[in-house]
Amino acid sequence: MALAASLMLDPAIAGERQAWVGTWLASPQSTWGADFALPVKIPPRLENQTIRQTVRISLGGEKFRVVLSNEYAATPVQIGEARVAVAGEGSKIVPGTDRALTFGGQAKAAIAPGTSLISDPVDMPLDALSRLSVSVYLPQETRLATFHWDGKQTTYVGDGNQTASDAFAATQTTDARILLSEILVDAPANDGAVIAIGDSITDGNGATLDADNRWPDFLAARLAPKQAAVLNAGISGARLLDDAMGVKASARFDRDVLAQPGAKAVILLIGINDISWPGTPFVREKSLPAFETLISGYLQLAAQAHAHNLSIVGATLTPFEGALSGTPLDTYYTPEKDALRQKVNTWVRTSGAFDAVVDFDLLLRDPEHPTRLLPEFDSGDHLHPGAKGNQAMADAIDLATLVKN
Image (cartoon, rainbow, N blue to C red; front, side, top):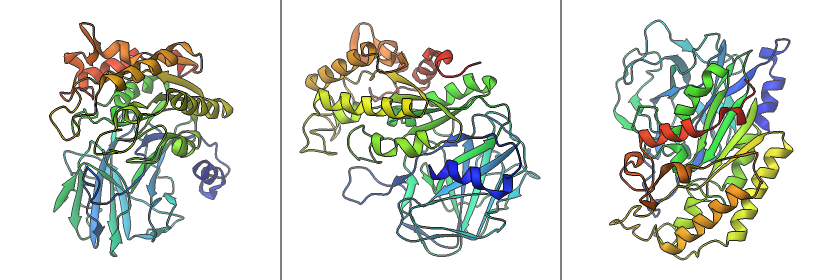
């Protein structure tokens, strides 16, 4: 609850009507070692370098704040300068829109280990679905321990302090997020935030780089006219029951959902990695989870949401036959795993544990081969939906289950 508390107590907004709500999110993850099956995709350290990242927000507002995370580091991160601007093409910013970020009135700041750093409000209106550029200069040697692996947006890294540069001279790029974790907006007429918590299907693994076509992106376009924000709390590789490429859903539910300012509803789509990872190089020695254990995990998340007066929408797990075949993860799908998926889906549809259900399985499956994705919705790996599938997922959600308007 630290984020919500800091907004309530911040003297910069004392006496003002507070209408802060999250409008964009990249759930922080801890970096991992070289022994894991997938590369980290970010340099281990930076020094005298600038990171420039672009985000497309959901709900607009009169002011905004930037949140940087050092949650998984053992040492502070020193911020030499940070600036924001309306994003242009590629790494460029729109001239004349550049603004300095301050932290407690200071241009320089340190992010203590295990914490986040929230900027002072930037008095610059943002339109819904607009794109913002965030540039952070790291003057000292900085070991990078907190990131978001599957950002689906190009991150630019360049030498020296380029935070105010209209054109950015990049020396390297990645599609992971570095330090940047959230954007908040002051939107007086907002109807709250909807948080989509899940794995790579929510994170957007099958989406197009720099295209903002994950299913939460499409949902954001539907909800923006209703003054509601959408936060994407997907982490590729995430699991319900165990830590993986991020901590388990039960361990991050408080941070990513309950502590979000203005949180009103959550859409839960997670569990396919709990079922599919056992027997693969990810967790070769682990066996399939028990059905009862999975259900207990879902019930706990539903209980947490309801205890905080949030509505929760349960989503069925999507088809995955043929997923990653011909790769070292060839055992990702088995009939036994699919039987467990379908048993879980039956429970999601019929248990009454959720305030509403969205049947992504029924929506995306091939009627001629129900254990597979419909080809037009398949990104090509038989696991992750592509842009058409993501659009269909967003369109299938009943907005009345999420917002009042």
